Amino acid sequence: MKKLSEAEIQDELQSLPGWEYADNALHTGFEFENFKEAFTIMTRIAFEAEKLDHHPDWSNVYNQLHISLYTHTEDGVTEKDIALAKIINDLVS
Figure 1 (cartoon, helix red, strand yellow):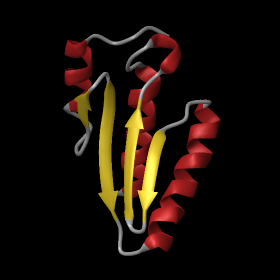
Figure 2 (cartoon, rainbow, N blue to C red):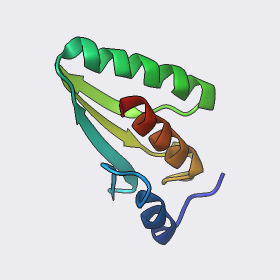
Figure 3 (cartoon, rainbow, N blue to C red):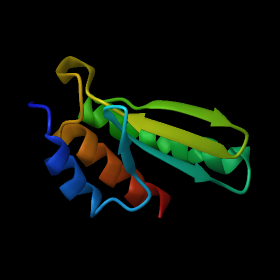
Figure 4 (spheres, rainbow, N blue to C red):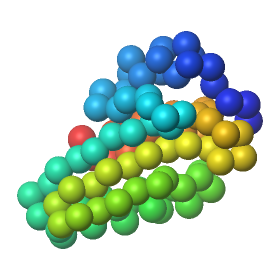
């Protein structure tokens, strides 16, 4: 899987509301009503990430979830990151 160019990433971001490209990775954040809702989404994302064999860098504090996607082996953003970002948006919406 090859690293996407910045132009390709910016193109993909048009269909990924809430995501931004910075520091060689895709980033987003979500705020939920409470910790239980945040953790429930994290669990659902974890199952999908396992299916893709591609895992987010993320942090959770109470009702907030921050996610970064980056393909370490390619030192940048790849189609795997785009695919996982789309799945995450679908799960959260």
